[in-house]
Image (cartoon, rainbow, N blue to C red; front, side, top):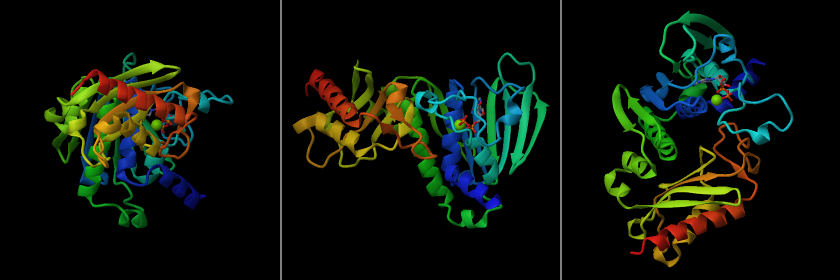
Length: 323
Ligand code: ADP
Ligand code: MG
């Protein structure tokens, strides 16, 4: 059981980036408008995510780090298919507590005192504290007691690069929030509420932001909202094509990348790829985020239909802005 437990936890949290993703998802699910991420030692020494969201009430806080405890699913058949939150498996805090030392301090705005939780392995302790409304989660000493896991980690610099790119994707897909990422005490990425263009400015600089066009289309239960770069700004790299489905940044399926490129038709040189940020919304039942514990792969019920809508939306945006 000990080994099975660590293997299951390792599927959710296998590196610092996983901790950041899960804690940020929780902050978003909690309705935060301000999310601050701090890394030390590439996240192995410390990951901290502070939010000003709804917090966890004192009556349920001791469940937060218990496996499969989630406040986000009704215990009824079909609930997963209708889920609208980023989390729903109730495994992230638990897995973080298996991988390192978890500390959480949280207060709903209407509660007088804050609660504090320490968890490591199956050991969970709860206390009372004072704190602003919201939640701060800290994970220290990631894999310190799992030498095999520690050996396979990337260098801190490489992990910081990937976490910075991940936070950049959150900023691009949730541009209406305050974001801050700091690394070993130095600010690395900051963003104040803006539209998608403003998020492109925060992540890729103002020059790129001046050269994106707005994409907006809705109907038939599919929404496409975001920006694409003007054709002359494209480059032969696909690492600037960003998609989210119902608020969750996803690993872009090749079908959606192709749909965007097809939307440019002959405007795009062969082999080139644009910069794009596209938020796709579908009805909750039309996608399934439960394909993998990391939830970055989303199965769309009608991928072909969504791809066609993306292509049309991009083509329409380009047609409205002649060269
Ligand atoms: P899940 O997100 O799948 O429900 P987690 O292990 O990530 O599972 O979190 C467990 C529970 O702890 C959540 O369902 C939620 O009730 C609470 N929680 C975790 N993080 C936060 C947060 N930042 N703000 C408010 N509640 C949180
Ligand atoms: Mg979660």
